[in-house]
Length: 314
Image (cartoon, rainbow, N blue to C red):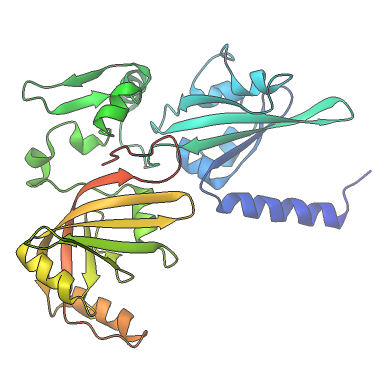
């Protein structure tokens, strides 16, 4: 019996909804063959859906056969939600991977694989041999340092929790040698959170006497991947604190995701393109700015609810 129009409409609607989520969703048939993947999966695996349809689930992870703890395999007849940590070889993205089987009339119809990225999804810049090296290092419980004790690499086990995330390629060497300062680049999820209009944002500063001061900071915006700015609207005590102590901390959160950004003032603008852009945005809300404070991002910490809570991610 052919599918009716309602079934087709429902399928298209579900595909559209799943394409909007940040988590990776992959659907397999009973033989471990991929039949569908959402756009987040295309980005994380750096492959189009046309390339992966027909592949075995283990081939996505560059394995020639199903591993002993394959989540698709272990979910069938096992726990309802089996979870494992996996690394996507081509892009180096680490994910918490789980799978849930769907049965119809006692027969397995398909398995939904759910991968939650725990590291930023960025375009792969490494070649295959180098990528395989990093993937191997990711799975190991160790770290490596140069003679000046700058971190070269470490895994996401107990060392990761103690030392924080240091997997960005620019940190293979000391940041100061590459960028000329202590700035860090905001990973994509953090940058997306900073610029999202529905994100909750606060800013904390400290007075010369050591008294903390926190404000709601809706004007927080990103200038670049390593710089943020704030429009000065009634920021009297905050402005005085920044003039005496250039360090500040920003907390941004939405839903279960939250990040704190430690930053340092590098400029105070009262004219120019950045000033005019911020001014134009705030004028729509009937607000007038005195200046724009520009910060370089020094550290980023995960403050959300998840496996990386309390970890430094940049």
